[in-house]
Picture: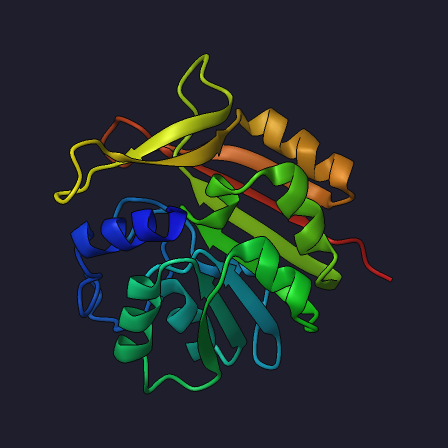
Length: 221
C-alpha cells in the first residue's frame, strides 16, 4: 500500500522546471521554495566521493550531486518516481536509480557512502530508531548525513499520519511520518553516534512555514 501511495503522490506532483532562475539545468534545493537556502555544499563532497539519496523523487538533487563529479546512488519506493528520474537524467554520468525501501537498500548494499541525504524524503517517512543506525552503518569515516523536511506542528511530535489524496479512492491514502523539533532530532543523531550535529529551521523567504535542516557526521577513524 505504501508504494502505491507514493506512486499516487508522484503522479500529482509537478515536475521540476527544466532550468532554475539562473538558467542552470541542475541545482540542489533543501527547501520547498525555489532557489532558497543552502545547496550541495552542506554535504561536503566533491569529485571521487560516493553519495546516497534516500527518497529521491524524480531525481533532480541527485543529478546535481552527480554533476559535481560524485558517484550518486538514488533510491525511492515509488516506481513512478524512479522511472521518471531515469528518463529525465539518462545523460548524467555516475548516477543510478533504484526502486527500493530505504532500510532494505541499506541492508543489502555494500557501499560506504561519503554523504547520505534526504530532501522531504525517507528520513521523514521512516522510523528514525531504525533508519539512523542503518545509515551510519553504511557511512564512510567522516561521512555526512543531511536531511530536510517541513518543521513539526507544535504539539504534534513523533509518528504521525500523513494523507495523500487519490482520485481513484474514496478515502485518502495514509502513510506514516516522523515529526520532531530540531533539538530532538539533534539528540537522536547524537545518541546514534553522529558528531558535529546541527539542526535548525531555514526561515521561509516571505514568511510562513520554513524548512527543518538537520546534519551530522560519522566519526572519523
